[in-house]
Length: 139
Picture 1: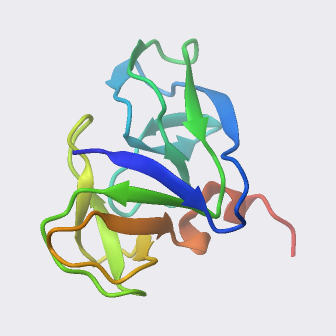
Picture 2 (picture 1 turned 120 degrees about the vertical axis):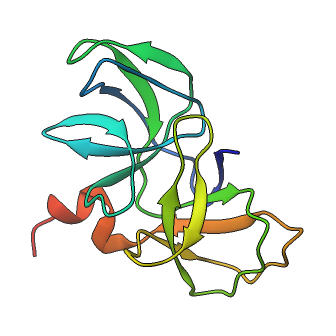
């Protein structure tokens, strides 16, 4: 299970940036990552600065190793989820590196962008208030 880039709402190509690991850990291709103090780590439910999806698997060293990550606020990701979902439903990030998925929402990090059956991939985007860019944009 992992997140995969599906498309951008704007129709553009994904923006890919090299971001630095916050901790010495392994991040896996398809992991959703979070920004903390300017560096990335594995996203978890209730994180406030979700960035996007890792495009490679790498064992990283704290404040040294860089990882390619999609960073667009309008990116839509596909994830395997054995549940039917309605457009507009909010979901949480769940799982460890290499096994991330979504679960019923309590913290509302993600939103479904399409209605899908239990046999189809779930299409989600990061809720704008939870995207890292929300904390950097000026009003």
